[in-house]
Image (cartoon, rainbow over all chains, first blue to last red; front, side):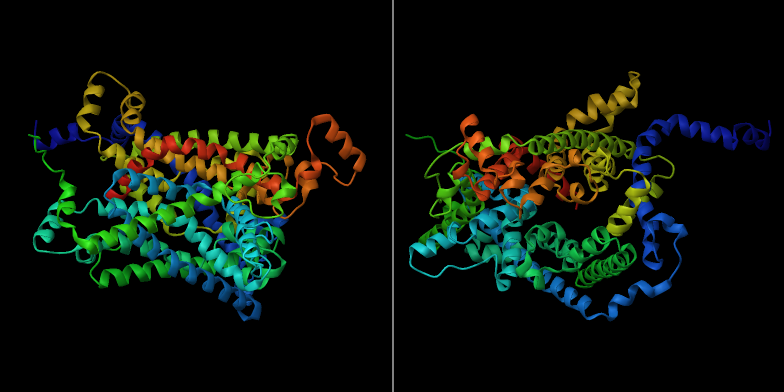
Length: 314
Length: 318
């Protein structure tokens, strides 16, 4: 046979190629299928729903039946109350980030310095507990511990003859309560990643440093921190979206009449506006704006990190 | 003469970290961390103590670590509430079904993706990466659930969570560390891929399954939002949502009975041996909190060691 005839015989038709692929990989495609279907249903279809922000959405008419109104729904940008809520959001989120970013790192570094394995394990075990409790439960705990008369803080103050503090009823305490209960819930858990990264540092580096006379603080500053810098940077980038979201899961259970001025944050507003009041279009518009800014923050932080010489996330 | 043992590697520091500065550092460190650990633990102790204390007594303040006037009445009262049992049932059901379902679906998709030569694999991977960067948002998500007919059904708790991109990445990493030779030899023996999944992948990734299973279960158990906004029927309300509803309400709502009805009060008191007059809204809430968190607190010590391993796998990937 000529070369041509041989390749004509061995070349497969598209149908045969398909059959061969299916025989070799068919079952794996089957395994992957549910993931693809579920993502289409619950991740990609809502993306198509983003256009609600540009329509005057009425439930009865559905997405496609609702009239297009362009940027009309973004009129909230002109309203004073919107910027008030935005300020509330950024203040709480920023304050929280300032507190909850360094804390797990510091605590991890400290835990790493404990030499007794039993004490180390004890501290760690207790520190993970708060993470597993829901925000509702946290709200209950706060209500009971900070209450007038019966709460532990106030009853101690009472016994000492001091004036009680109405934590839950005065506006000025709200932000601190939110931020520090976040810290309580997340610090222990946050140390896990840092401790894992710390344990990955080569022991020989420590030994060399000790031989050179480096004391404990020197070692922490020159070995521990640089050693886990990539982890710190990645976590920082991943936490960037947190700057815009004050967290409705945490805040909604804590809202009461006296703290509304500070507790009205954007994500809570979106939930109330959209799900309780049915104003889907405007709520979607606000949400879209926040998402876009979030994406910008993540990509921006990522780019800055890369420019500074660190490995980014994307 | 004592046999000199080889010092463990990380005790080299112990040999050199001497002197009063280090001693001080250690002392302060241990103290600080001890306080930290106590602060993490204390709210739980307070809730437990309060829940076992007579409500009216708690109002006087001063109950810190243990109940002053112990009673089981707070618990007796909530356990009589049918709303409570219904909510507990919903939560348990959704946690079990949701977690097992999610573990199965996510891991099997991950296993499918370990087939590196699969045509179009990179397209699929990108397809799965995009939703991690960008999403539809809360409202479009809600509208979507509505269009799919999932609102106000039990399945709204389960189906959206069946596949988790993040978890599938972790599974994929975990499966990837299992040597191909193992799979090859099973294939040569005529085993189908599903058999390989069951006999090889799952048993060898027990730590990952345990860790991710715990996280998923906790997510289900603690979710109060879906129950508040995605369902209406009382029988579909899960525990955390019930707690959320009760947070600012009073005794009547919790017990499901009208406390202003004195006659009913007396009847209840004599019938079931509960001293209703000493129960306050707060003390009952404390009991409800404990019952709502108890399963997690019980399971926690056992599963603790597994999630350390699971997170390690995730962090090594970076």
